[in-house]
Length: 525
Image (cartoon, rainbow, N blue to C red; front, side, top):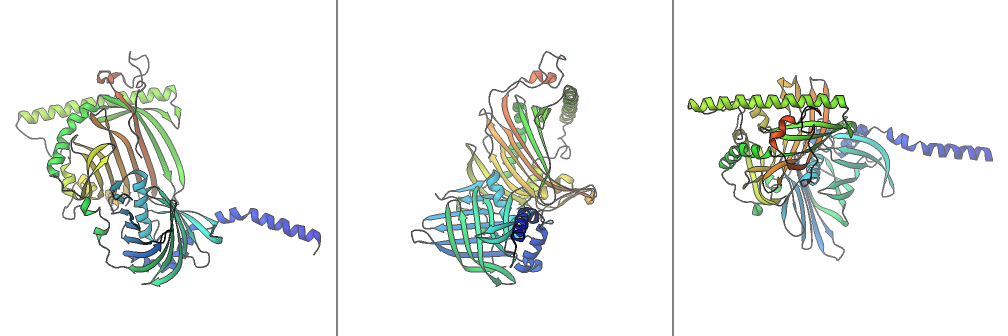
């Protein structure tokens, strides 16, 4: 072979190497998933896997034996336990809340990113990647990778809450050889080997778990598909639960206290920043918008003035238009409140109670939901009562608000002394259709978080909101949006100057926007 030919072949080889990333990106991630589903037992068998129980053993570096347990149950239950010597680590998601048993033996409800990661683990492991789109799971890019020196194909999986997981497949067997994700705030890598058939599925009998700095080489000693794995496995431990108080009385106190809370809130103003992210069907970001506003409270309503968009101040013309909008909103609130007070006063004079239909209260929550797993914990430095809620199967909703509440499950944190909600997490257990689905279809798994902080030892005020929304509009366009709102820089506010807020400069002696803030509230996880 001539030198020229050799050089040419070398050049071609180098050129081909430069094309590898492009070839990798050209891989079809959905095709990889379909190949995996077929290899793992088929979509029918995987869909019928109501429960999966895995038990195994390992040895610690000092020669002591340890045990590993993984239980899953449809639709989204997850339980993981590692016992090494005297240390027992448990993480679980029960379909309403995520919780953990730490190394020192304490049990705690997980919030923020850690809670979302466990919820995502429950969704992922129970889906088996079957009907990913229907289960609101995004299947992202595919690329070539190496797993322990061997070729592999990698995809990125994104759940409804935006949590990502990297999954690696063997190109020959099409089975999963590695998963990488953050679970409960700790980075994990899981390697799988020695797959064996079990009830129509392929189950790995060798698992190597890398959790933070620890490594567990697990030999599976028992595996069962569709065995008896009850709901109690995933519930917050009974020994750490407490007796629920009279919820009807507690919620009535919260409801009755709301007017007093609304008046206290009117003494505060602050800054609100919003980040709205829209995703395509693969979980890739297609649009992002940032907004910053000043806000205050009036008659129980939050009144916000937009001052920045995508990090840039509004133009003079845009700010004037926004200020005019805020002025009109203030006037509308004052008119509505005056009309409402007049109506209540008239009803009082006539000896009538306010109609139950006028303004739905917390009693709908009581009737539409059932409450389980009560416990007492510390949250942001305060003692709170925590309990899970889920749809009450005996309640038959009729009105729109009743139907909405009846589709929710989640967990709530309540400060019994302050008579207010410190945190609320919820998600829709099924699709919710507006106008029979013609107007909009709010998809199953749509979730939200609302969190407050106790400010000045006086009142709980919002600090954080998060929403993960999947919706199909007019039977055509499917939209997946995440929105995160952060409240900060709370300060005492002179309610008498409200009328001047939102007016353009020169229209009043008061400033057009809220003054600078001396302090801030704690930020959530």
